[in-house]
Length: 123
Image (tube, rainbow, N blue to C red; front, side, top):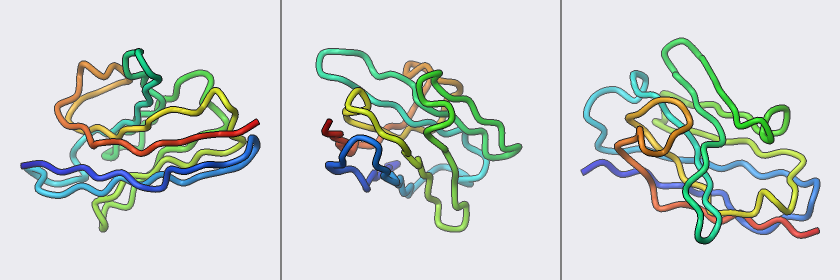
């Protein structure tokens, strides 16, 4: 059974930074050949795609409000995906999930999700 485990969330003041991590295990096939994404979810809302990466060629895509503030990256040797969050705003407060086995920023395209890590940004 595929496992994606997020970590790194927490409480931070506006303007601060966090680094979210997502460690994968039991993936069918090599971590390198998957497409990966980070989503966030506000209470009562559908998951919103924040960042996407196709590791094989380094292609990335970001939600407009995340451009220039968030960076998606990976450490293939550690089977770990990252999301670097900079200049955080209170509107960034949400549960953040990593996902694999899909494409783009639509959550309905993805096969695997982690359980999430909570980010709270105080004003």
